[in-house]
View 1 (cartoon, rainbow, N blue to C red):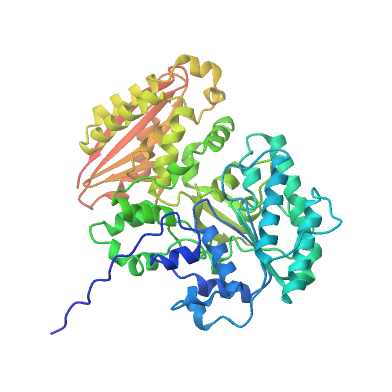
View 2 (tube, rainbow, N blue to C red):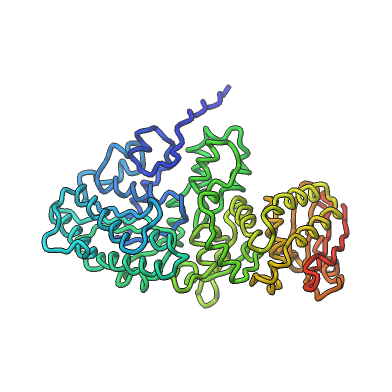
Length: 528
């Protein structure tokens, strides 16, 4: 008779820990990335990786540092223990802009000088002779050269959150440009220091073009969309099921996946570590990652550019759009992708060998949270948002079609007339559907945009236990015309969901430009 394997003991959750030494010494859970780190080191010299905030980038950088410094004891039992040459130790220069709000103006120079000074002290090197203190690029080059000469081994340069001084000032283009230009001069040093370098790794949130920030670094390899390194940061499903197995009892495994998994850069999908750790700690499903940084600049940009919010669930882009970022010209899709609000959902190679990417929300946390933040910018007063959400939620679960109509009419009626006079979204025809979609997306339900059928695409589908709601939207000049419900019927959209034991509700919604509200709400329910 077989016996069940003993349950694994629970360990300390490494919440907020960014150094391998502290994580290992305190007996925390650890997802071993050391094997992948060595694979990357063995494949080249100059690398760049973009990942959203709170994704374990700093811990990865620290792992590189401990490998090259030969701290063998930290890797006992890990993949690197038997793969790394512990007899060689390399001088490591680590520059970090990850802490605090990045400084403006000349204070950036002070931050860089402090970074260089700390590294000189750590390496036991004297101050350079004959170099002005404000010659930051010259001091950086001297630090690299002296580290190589003093240790007899080429230098490892690790730059953490390389772009933070720019991003912290992105709402002030003049200051952001000054930050970019100052950092470009510093990073250009790497181009002329090749003979002294063993390994260079830069990480941050955004990918600025080589012309604007990495001038001359033509050998810098961007691995952001390389499928081999998709899981270099973050936790995979396998990691959750094995490393964190002791934390899973009492939590709905499918809900964990729906809420937090889904970030993808062309290979294996991953969870944001911050979300997973906070969930295991509090045992509650919340928007942990989203709430650590309100995307005020992003929301303002989407509003000013009259973004059709249903497109957030199915945005298409090519690689040049996703892997470039300029202070003077910020593409919303690039910012949404690089900052983690959208991720890769599908990759398709075209006949001309170009690659087309389809983006969408990584998971329910981001979909719900981003749409809730967007609603006030699209005209819904904040005091109305929560009551309206609760009202619609109740109406949907009770399949009360009249209350759904009443709730939606009240939602649009809450938009102040003064808002229409002052807001650029007022003349945007997609505004009505955007409000409707973001309101529904904020409910956290199973929502399907442009739901494909054999006869076309349904504008919006909501799937609940025993109930399916098919919505079609039309904008009319004044009076309802009945085209929305007619299209659902004529296209046979309901066929996809018939025979599954659910009631299928066909709902045609018409918005009036004149009334600025719902003027047509036709319904039909099919059972069986």
